[in-house]
Image (cartoon, rainbow, N blue to C red; front, top):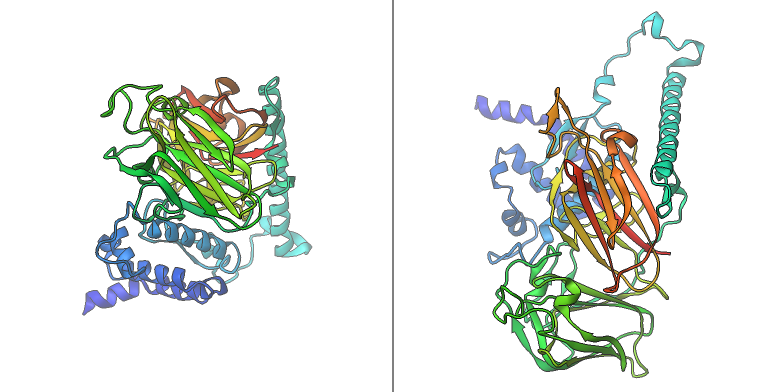
Length: 509
C-alpha cells in the first residue's frame, strides 16, 4: 500500500494537468486526440511506459486488428504528430499559464511532463528589493517594458543578420532576410478531392503523410508486376514503388470539371547493374500522353532518376478532363522494354503553375503556426534525420525546428517548367552530431555549401555566425530554374562538420 500511495502522489500534479488539457475547447472538439493523449498519459502514470509502442497504440487506441502493419499504415505516426501540434497550440493560448506542460517528444510516444517557466513565479508575492523596484509605474509596466526591449533587440539582431546575408551572398540569386518573410502572403494548397492509385497493387496503403493510396483501378491492358526490391532511394514510402502496371495500357479516370495537377510515380526495379534484368539506361523507354497530348516522349526512368531503385516523380500542372468528363492516360512501350508506372496522383491544381512544395525533415507531416501543411521528408538521398529537444528562440513555432536532416545529402524536387523561389530553414544545435570535433571544449562551427542543379546558391553557410545557437536562419533564393529532368536538385555539401536543413519550401514565381 505505501508504494501505491507514493505513486499516486507522485503523479498528482500531472494527472490534474491532463484533466485541465482535456477540458480545453480544442481537445473537447477532438475526441480522437483526447483519447490518444489520455492513453499515453495513463500508461505513464501506471509505470507501463515500456508498453507504449506503435503497435499497441494502433490496437488499443485506433482499434486496428492484430494484423496491423506499421509499414503500410501510418495512423499512429500521423495522429501523434497532430497531437504534438494540438498541445503546442494549447500551451500557446489557453494553457499559457499552466504550471506543467505535457509534450510528446518527436520520434517518441512516451509523454514528457515539464514545469513551465511560470511555475517559479506562482509563489506568494513578496516586496521587491529596493534596487529592483520599477517605481511608480508598477510591476506590470516593468515586465512589459522588459519584453518590449527584448523584442526590439531581437528585431535589430535579425535586421543586422539580414544585411550580413545580403553582403555575404552578393551576386547570387536574391536573398530575402527572414524578417521580411512574415510580410509575404501565405500561399496555401488548393482544396478539393484527391486521387491516389497504386498501379499493379490489390491493397491500399497509408503513407507517411497520412494519404490513402487505393488499389489499382480505372485501367485497361497491361499487367501487374511486383518487385522484391526493399530499399528505394528518395522516398520514405518504398511500398508505393514495389508494384507497377507494365506493358501497353491506359487509365480512364472520371473527374469533375476543373484544373488538376497530375503526378506520375516511377522507379526502375528490374533493369540496372544490380537488378535481375541487368542493363541500364536505354533498357526501358516509353511514351506517356494525357487526352491525346504527349507528356513524356522516349522517357527512360533510370536515366531520368539518375539511377535504378530510385523514386522518380513527374509533375504536370494544368490538367483537365476531356469533353467526356474523363482523363485519358496512355502508356506506350518504346523500343527498349515495356512501359510502366508505379503510382498515379491527381490533385487539385493551380492554374499555370504547380502546387507549393513544402517539406519538413521528419517522418510525419506538420501544420505550422501559419496554417501551412508541410509534407514529411521526401525526395532526399543521403544524410540522416535527427530530433532535438533544445529550446528554440526567436520564433513563434519552435516545434517546427525540432528536427533536421544532416550529413552530405541532396533533394531532387520535381517541378514543371518555370522559375521558382526556394526557402531554406536552418537551425544550429551546437550539441548535434559532429560536435565531438571540439577544441578547448567548444564545438567547431559548422559550414556548408548549397547547390541547385550544380550551381552554388549559398557558400560557406555558418548558422552560428549569422544568428547564433538555437535560433532559426531562414534564407530565400529566387530565380531558380529546373534542369532538363524538370527537377530542382538541391545539394547540401559539408565544408566543416556536416550540412543541415530543417525544412524546404518551393513556390512558383
